[in-house]
Length: 301
Image 1 (spheres, rainbow, N blue to C red):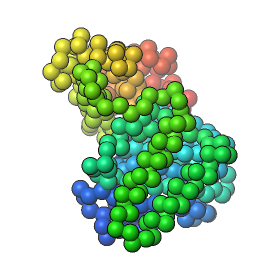
Image 2 (cartoon, one colour):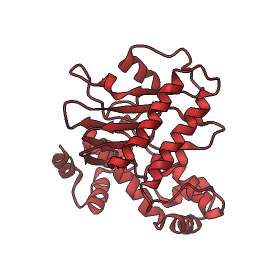
Image 3 (tube, rainbow, N blue to C red):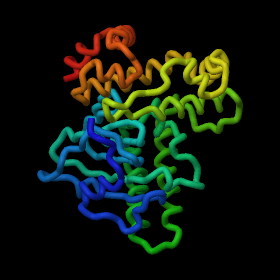
């Protein structure tokens, strides 16, 4: 897997220029036409993480690789990407068009927590195939973004934040079975949110010398200063899953990505995921996936 792409890398590699206002610690936003990145000279998008958020409106069939999943669509697609999950997408036809916008988390400082929305969370639904009547409203939002970016309006970035949220809310309406954004208003929700943040903070694993620090329910309970039974009840109440189930699912997700997108050996992957002995990892993986890591890698490739 390639190293995480920074927003500076994006401008340097894709556009060969750097915005004057791009500074660490400051929020950044920009919007582009996919047509400008299309054609015979276009480079394939690498599968990796970015340190910025991205919303893509793609007109044309494509294949998206997101975390450990592969999803194909045969028409217009709305794709949400966040810094926690590696991804790429490839067109299934020679020409395609559309728009995309990129922004940093700091861009939404004092304007809400953009990462709390389900479309930007690790377990959320990031990809939406659109019907004909859903295309025009999204197209108009992106056209307004382009218009505002070209303007000298003093508060245009406030408008941009509102337009991003319009896209997010539109997507949430396309998935009525998904939970809506909530505020941590009770103890169980707060504990669940802190647990999720602590779990996700251990990822991505980008070097084989990197090892996760917490892998057992007791590890997390100690860090959160709660009894392990209290943590388990809180997670069961808010997610329907036990602490062990959630940890196992996230470790397996990362294991699959490392097996699919790195050439690390099984021992290196096992150590990075907190297993001191490769056989323990192999048994854990086989129990969860019903395949050995080696077999999974061979089938994936």
